[in-house]
Image (cartoon, rainbow, N blue to C red):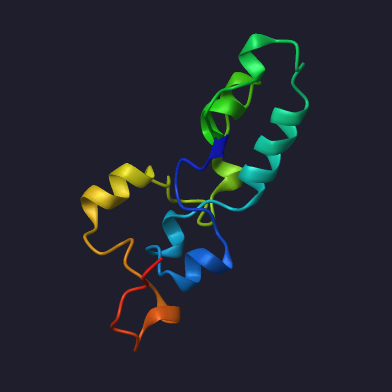
Length: 106
């Protein structure tokens, strides 16, 4: 599986109000991670059955500069865990659920 280290720019991130855009990464971090993942030799035991974090995967294939993935080139995006600790309400439900006080039964 592949998981983002921090919030990735998307309509979902906007809709669910996942913090300020300056602390997001561009979606290309995930597309580059997917390319790295599918380029691995499936016979290699390190390429299968792992839970990858996008940044860790890219580092494992030699990427060292993550500035091109920043939405704001001057801000290093914090990890999701760090965002959750720092900003209460960062991961609140977004615009799509406003005006609907009853939670889903799913």
